[in-house]
Image (cartoon, rainbow, N blue to C red; front, side):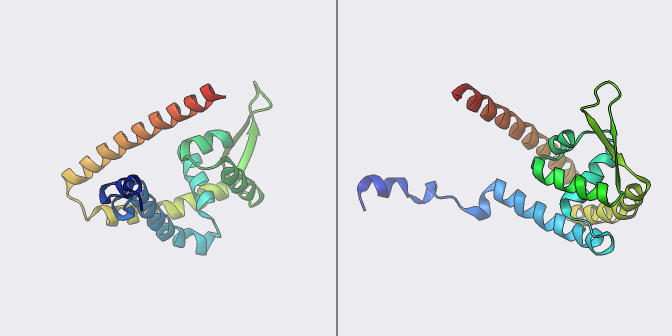
Length: 168
């Protein structure tokens, strides 16, 4: 091993997954999503992407699939598959914008609203149990910190996309 190689592998330069914030957030998100998924997968045969589409459209009806992908930061292909499945199961309705027939707008059908109203209380109860580990002030701090990290991540993502566009 050369001196230069040894310098580059000093302990401080190593990535320690158990302390790496993106990894920790991903693991937390996966555990929470899988726990909540047990409630809707068993009873409604929904996937995690399908549930996410339903929850977004329950809050923000009349979005396009692209807008759903943007709001969830999900891959457009995963959203498209979820939308197709939800349309086939009649949990979503697709309408077209009167001003621009190329733009489709998605909203929950009565069946989709029924799924949402039955699963949302379980999701909220899970969130409550999860947050019970924190004091009220810690919850407020977590909320503030998550907002700050989300804003920063969006800024970094925009800059990355601008840099890619500039390099093209």
